[in-house]
Amino acid sequence: MSVDFQRDIYCLFGLPIDNLTREQTIALLRSKAKKKQSIVWSTVNVNWVVQAFGDDEFRTAILNSDIVTLDGKPLLWLAKGLKYPMRETVPGSTLIQLLLEKDPNNPMTIFLFGGEEGAAELAMNKINQYPCGLEAVGALNPGFGSIEEMSTDAIINTINKTRPDILLVALGAKKGTQWIEYNRHRLKAGIISHLGATINFLAGTVQRAPRLFRSFGMEWIWRIFQEPKLFFRYARDGFFLTSYIIIRIPAWLNYRRYRPNDIENMDEIILKRKKAIIFGRYVNVPLNSTLRQQLFENLQKKQNLYIDCSRTLWIDGRFAALALLTHHQMKKTGQELTMDDNGKKLLRIYN
Image (cartoon, rainbow, N blue to C red; front, side, top):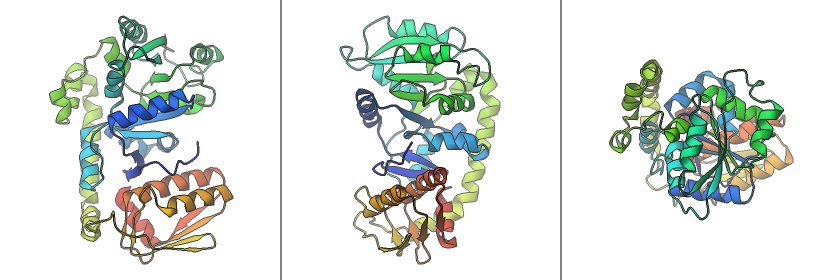
């Protein structure tokens, strides 16, 4: 995985989030599948945020994803609180439903991996019952076991022989992301994504919350009603999110205090030195920013990089996300990205 510096991404809870609508995401997924490009798509909800804070391996899996979208109203509300231009959530289950409703004459193929016992096969039969925008080409439940036991040649070959446009994984968030990380280089699939309860929704073994619940961010109430065992998970996640917001309120207020009213027309102030970038008072990184090209070139040259924000009052969320992914990629190749203390302080707003 290499960094795509043309992604319109923002940093939220220390994770890179793509600014995509549902239709834009569908178009992007279709394009990647048509070009036979294998990518990983992650959908981040509050539970994923909580796990990412406490599990470096889980967080790394998200950072390694090629597309990361928001799944959950609370995260969207927080993104809007930071003035991010994100318009809607992009839950995996919603996108799969939208794909089902697309042109049946040009369906995307999908392989279902995981879910409750028998759910994948039931979901496959329901998808293929009538012509629709998806064609299920396989279903497999690997049962319970270690990542290695779920990654045998027989299992991988069963998936690969169908060469699906979409490989939908449902093994539980932690195990599912681990399985994808462990096997992504072996899989011959277009879009690889862990989408939690989506297989159960497709099979009808679990009913998704009505639209009214989802529109007000209350889907969790419906899920607890259907699956009481989820109560403690939602309680823990809610406590974490509330605590995080309370702790971050001073930093967010300071952010809004210095945030310029019109960032679209603001010029970047960038002075290049050997292996260093010096920022001026405000750092804004639109899609046509020269900084994106500079970061790309630095990665290609495999040079260490120092970023000086000593004079900076404000950093936008797009730069925070790019810095996050650049640092992650540089670590893989033995490079270092360092920043002065003021820059680190400004970035903490997004972490």
